[in-house]
Image (tube, rainbow, N blue to C red; front, side, top):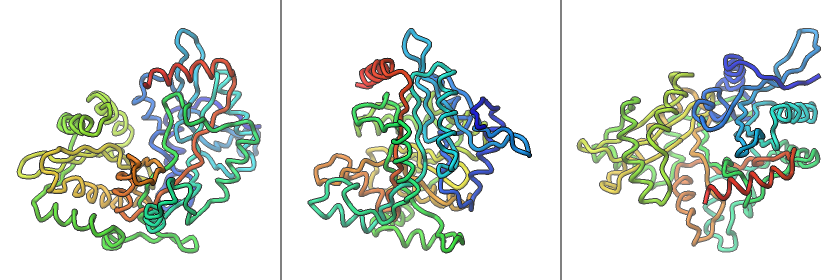
Amino acid sequence: MIQVRQISPAQHLAFLHDWATPGSTAEETVSFLQTPAWAKVKQEWRSESIGIVRDGGPGGPELLGVGLVLYRQVPKLKRYLAYLPEGPVLDWTSPDLPEILDALRAHAKRRHAFALRIGPTLPHRIWRKDTIKDAIADESITALSQAPADVTNLHATRLANQLRHLGWRPPKAAEGFAAGQPKFNFQLPLVTWTDGVRTRLSEDEVLAGMNQLWRRNIRKAAKKGVEGSRGGREDLAAFHKVYVETAGRDGFTPRPLDYFQTMWDALNGEDPDRMHLYLAHHEGDLVASTTWVHVGRHTWYSYGASTSAKRDVRGSNAIQWQMIRDSMAVDADVYDLRGITEGLAADDPELGLIQFKVGSGGEAVSYIGEWDLVIDPLLYKVFDWYMNRRSR
């Protein structure tokens, strides 16, 4: 029998540690959004660590997977959306998956959830840099998904079909409870795999994979005297000042300083190497700053900021290169530049972001996206309306 039950943060973290060991051949990424520490960051949600347990074996209970569940309450009612961002962490190719998902639904229902949302991190399709550049140049292609992928993972295709057969559904574009994670991401591989053998790339090989503009900007920053450094918690205020400037220039709503302080305390309280802060100075002026997150064999470029002044010294490129080298230093398989949209039309407002990231030499990776299991259809519709109204 497979059951889902609450486990301690220590049990949760121990499972993630074993699963995310560098060099593991597991297809699934362990996201920092599935660490116990992330519950402390998302303080507006209730949360718990869960274990997917098989009972009755000769060796006793077997832990098959874990997850961080965030519970968002319906206003004035004790009913919840149960959300596992980029999780749970388990073998999505397991023949026991129907029983696992049934156990997950039963647990969510016991917690008074009206719906359950999951986000498997099993890569589905991969488009390499040359394919992306050719697609951008092709006027008949307006979305990345219209371009033939270089790699298609049939395990992920089967998983999507299986979820649909079991009654799960992907949220519509207009839905999402204003909480969804990106389906399309941009990643820079730092290792190669040949017949199951893992080979680390050298710094020269990573640089050679970048386009001429990225390499030139990295060299230019060094020539101009840009100094990159690691910062501490006390430097978050300086990062935040530049981040607010970036938000005003790029038209998004910035998070408050205390969000980043909470994130720093939570993630580094769990693992002192979980979150880094990077600062790029030129002649004493802070010109760019970024945050970086590390779990096992994966690192992420989390938040970035730059000043409008001194853009020509290329401080952002300098600390991108430092984050990539630090990712190699912790033996990560992947440096993740996080979400992209798939629009490739010449007038798409996000096209510049894809073009910037493709210069790193990496590849676009799509997951199968997030999936919902509706337990109470009426509350599902009401809560979705409420969250989308709040996000406007």
